[in-house]
Image (cartoon, rainbow, N blue to C red; front, side):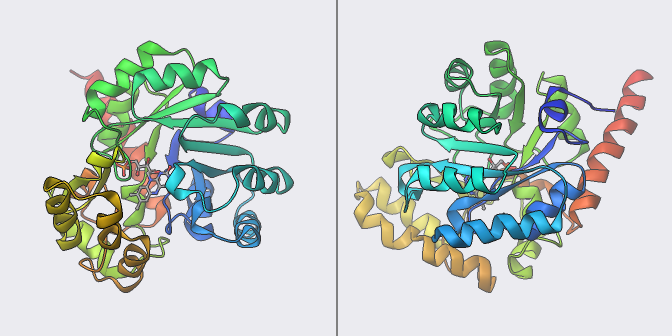
Length: 320
Ligand SMILES: Cc1cc2nc3c(=O)[nH]c(=O)nc-3n(C[C@H](O)[C@H](O)[C@H](O)COP(=O)(O)O)c2cc1C
């Protein structure tokens, strides 16, 4: 049940993709998502040195025999090294699927295709999905305003963006931004998506390496505990509403430059916050779904709840 063009394309059991998360989507979490029947996606930018990226892909491969994806992050700020060098590694290591995000992957499509790698590009608007289709992407994921990470600049929620994108393209669409359980999974399919992309829900799982205090924070958070920073710099990010986020917003409001705000939003501080569990230590990307998550489960339990729960909902709907 719930076979779609996404399960066919990626050769996976369930149309559930674990969103690549910088500093978080490492071998254990990625393999757990793939082993549970979804598609785990490694966040390549977590590994500054090419040899570390290569060994993390190998480690993931040792933990699962199922297909895995790797994120190709094309946001300029996240590119400490050449994109082609990462692609060399993906090809050498036999990566099955690449999820690109940020700028258009057009220059890299021929190489990826030649190597037999499936490409899904992540966008934050239907017009970008049309471009992804035109340049030869196999699928597209679209993230609404609710999402953790970068929701784009138009503040359009998933409920609007997903059907808009489905209507705009013929390639399969995966819905991201706020999806976290069986109800939202089935809603995504009803909107015409052929799968869901989840980041925030997978942070509050046993396999995720972040400090347990962050997971506990998520279970207690409500739907207004995240906010947007970075919009004046055209790099909107949904993050938890902590002191560094409020400081960054205050600086943005009085016209500070990105250079001035950078010390507050530094990636090093964010990394420290994930590792120490001090939610005030730095900027932490998480989506509005924090308000919908009240348990720390294994990845398999999360995916089983989604699939099992969705079947039950379908039964209920049939009786209406
Ligand atoms: C902590 C965190 C880090 C993220 N890092 C990345 C990243 O490095 N590259 C990327 O393309 N998306 C990144 N994202 C976005 C996710 O891949 C995914 O699109 C998003 O989490 C989906 O929305 P949701 O959080 O509501 O599930 C990140 C999200 C979170 C929560």
